[in-house]
Length: 363
Image 1: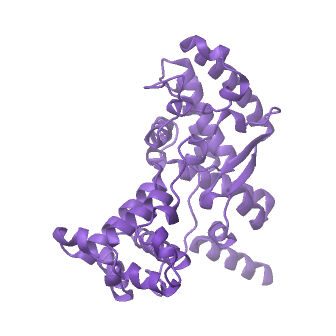
Image 2: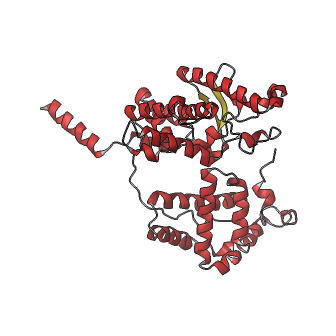
Image 3: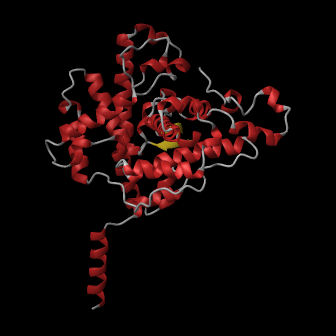
């Protein structure tokens, strides 16, 4: 297995052996003279080396930031870390907003730049994060949109193999299980895509050690109604693997455990379990196509459906049933409960109804 590079060991400045012997403050001075592009590339090799949505977003964010500081393509390779200032960071925020980017997108770009600066500050004594005091656009907190009961029913109808329009019975069942798992667990698209067979407990009650953001792990419960579907899917998955790759039947359990739960056979090689995994685009396409079929039974935004909306659906349902925001935060894998608090926001219409109800009860 390829090991992720250590940001410190790979940095053009941070941990050169010869510089270990220099006084610590000189590292900060030397970093100022490093080319910003090289330091960014080193950061990305550690924090955004994958093909997931978050990794791609980080790469775009810092590329745009570097281009903004350089001001011309000819200077991109020559911009120094010392040219990065608070004013440059704030100017970057204002410029992206002037292009018409959504405030949420600009806020994410700024968060990436701030994390980059914070990472350098943590590793180089005396370096001050230039983006630390930069301010992002002020946004009103809005409640994420989930699916209502009718939409969920329409989506499940569309995901059922009988209605999937897929000639391959395995692919139809796989896609149905993907939809149901997202609805029932609130997992992120990449968390589902990267699940391995060995992470499913023998009793089918738990997904073990699911890697979440920030390199943290959590166990995810599979409700009773999902356990039977899990069993059905795994039986069909095993039969499909053996049918296509007879040698798979001879693999010992520890090797089988390294294969993805959601298997694709496009360009897959038996000796490379990871090659059987779904791509990020495939996961999004499955959900989008299922949403479009669901529109036949329910006219709404299901035609633009994406995996995260199913996560929002799970969050709303769990909050409504438990009334426990910390429980929901833990189930979603949020490290900060303030992120989960978005689900408690109420619409203006809900506020109006509550006021009318209060007034009618007091009169």
